[in-house]
Length: 280
Length: 315
Image (cartoon, rainbow over all chains, first blue to last red):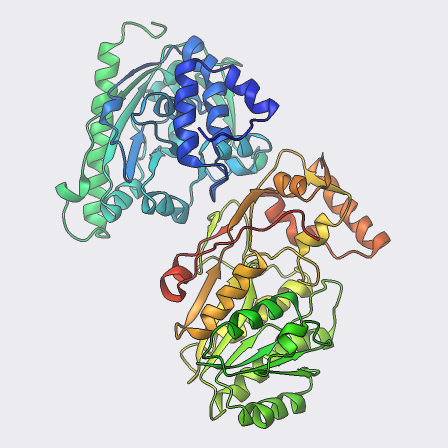
């Protein structure tokens, strides 16, 4: 890592990390440099993301991760995952998982809903750690510059679905497939098993849209239950090879998105079959 | 191309631009126009520079400029940068300089025998900044067309669009450079006025990213545009991308976060009591959400890449 002095706050954050995580943070810091990127991410933010997610990742959700080697070492890549759990802890755990285990370490750029930057404190923290607002131009820039994008094609529909629909993928947006075809970026289908049971949704108040959020969720529990997360990365799918031709053809894009959806659903089913219980 | 007419030449950017152009041996003449005396002796004593102090809002002056000395010097390129800097300046005379001068200058230039190119310096402030829009701002980004925007911004947008509408319809090759904010006195920088207070208030919970351009980079971008044939709109980013809190810190100011709803009355009171220029309503978007210019088009067609970071603290 660069030989510049660290502030007190950053030293405290680093003290919270294990030696392995500090080493990874140093590799990321060398890549990111001293400044901020155009979305507000910086090296200190990556360290903060690792530190802030550590108790949840290690102790609360005890994440069991398999298949991270399927994430390419470099170049434009899209991780497409299912989204659930009323509050987006699954997104934090996936972001943390990539930060912890991608080799060499890569900074994931998780796409967040457009209302997230309106949230005080939280929006800033997420941006420092690598999150980006879900505008098309933003995600295009990430792929143009050969970075690693994490998308949740179900969006808020997935995270706010009723408990009875758990592990059934909802309406699957096709934007990631179009981007993959245009930028020739492989898509790594990814399943997150466990989040569906963390805080089942009791109801929601659609008329209360604080800070631009589409609704106010009412979960059964005030805090997430200590379910065990299982993250499964599938083999990268090169949509531009499987669906050659005009990358803007709607039929081709729809078929490509369905291909990713099927792959994610298969990984979910596999993860469900492999897990022994909700909390183990 | 080597013969230039520069409006707004007495601004700090105008002087940097003149130095940039004079550094090229093929620059044979610069006709510089400004509202104030030229302060830069080094530029003044260069035999290639002719300086005229002139009120550009008078149409007769514009005609005499272009078809008198401008024709005599066989001016080929206009670099148009003249506009009122202060947000407090309002009214028809201000609009005459900010908008009407631009239109008249373009109309006269289109019939001029030697003029071939028109470069207009616009501002990143014309862009809208909200969370619904990309934080990476390119040429296609929506403009801030709020009906309640102050004249300062409305004039800039109208002037920008007035020039843009002539692209492809005029025999001139036209370029509009929407530049990142250049911090400094006499630049019309809202952020500079914000930072001139000993204590800067920030909306609690927000610390967005801001992109700043140095005088050298801005002058270089304008010089590159003047020497290029590329047409169209170009967003011109700077080399400094920092959160607002860090900019305040590096400027040596104290900062204090207050709940968002308190920002407007606090800064309205500051304007009223101290007569300062910073308008919170105008800057609300970028004090909450980041917006950084994308420079891919400028790099590809003008060969411009930001190189020089802003030096803190600012005067």
